[in-house]
Image (tube, rainbow, N blue to C red):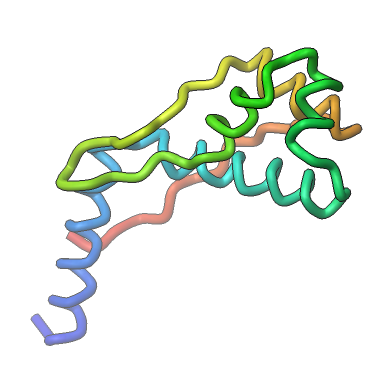
Length: 108
């Protein structure tokens, strides 16, 4: 096995370990970044968004603080409901569309 192939295989193994620990975090983070980025792009403050959602401003802050993994444990995650996510997007004037895409294959 070539050095490059060995390095790719090792990287893929590390990626799989990470995905096994917290498979939802990457999806959640992408969604949070998209929504929070759109909020900032539109010039809407967390306070104004919270008022539009009839929610506490602290719930917006908690949602926008993405979860991180330290020593294999999820730190400070939130698990927002679909209702909260839809309300957030609606308050921004957007809908959310989901689609399934195939995962990339890995080298074993």
